[in-house]
Length: 334
Ligand code: NAD
Ligand code: LMR
Image (cartoon, rainbow, N blue to C red; front, side):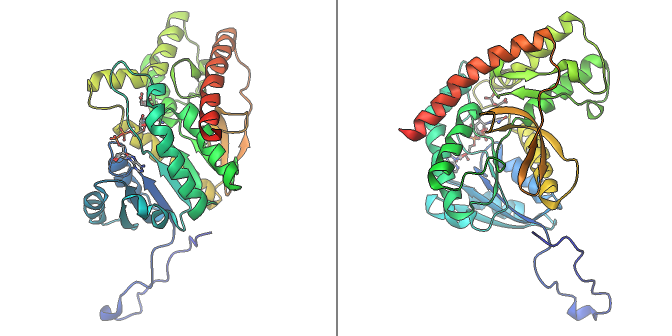
């Protein structure tokens, strides 16, 4: 693990000799799809993260401009750019954490599942690279449809003999970020004080906010529950429609991805009590609260007590999830 001790001070060294002795301590992080709508702000925010010592930016196009730009920021991480498929393995070698926002986004009228045809192949190729070049890395998978791309990744890793369910994490943090924001609006609170668990998956009815478990404890009218559930489940579509053909959520997603990646890095560092929601692969595939530690999602928490509304939502979510999971698994097996 990286050494987080402060680097040796050089106050006793004469002014002319004040050269650093190597890269700052921290983790090595790769972003795949770094030149995209999510990739660019995500790369910028990860360059600002003090837990990152080396940042590898990879894309099939335009990476070098983004890398040159971001490398001028006077923060600790050393940035390197990699462009084109023959650079994938080099970009991945030695990485502790790999964040994947590679793939096409939705346009109005499309479902996330409509992206499967293109993104399934992209995720498969990338995961084969991870299996070859950094099989012990924690993987944060953002590319849609998450409900199917995470099963694809799991199958690729199983085939390569490197599958570790603790290390493969689908990113559903944007659902939590949205839920915190919308619930805070209804309650008249600061969103930073609100914590809403969101479980299930990352598409339509599979996104299941557990409003009975909101912190701080509070109660909602049936109208508020319907409004909040619908808005949280359709938050992605709200942005897709507002962008009117220019893509889907990128800035709020970059924020959410960094929030989740930072939690993963704090877990890797050994911090206690790092708990976030994530789409994990053991239930068999389901988003729930997990405790992040040195080896990834070390503990998966049960859903806790659900009310009748949530139990009905869970049944709907499970049905749709099963279809998306099957689709991902069959894609890789066939
Ligand atoms: P974008 O088109 O702006 O960027 C995608 C980037 O991926 C492009 O730069 C493209 O060159 C790159 N790319 C394509 N094929 C690649 C490959 N084989 N290897 C590496 N990079 C490759 O799209 P975006 O808005 O950044 O969205 C990216 C993905 O994230 C979409 O699938 C979108 O649906 C998804 N998304 C997920 C969430 C979530 O909550 N999990 C939220 C928002 C968006
Ligand atoms: C989101 O929730 O914003 C993403 O999954 C992108 C989308 O297509 O809605």
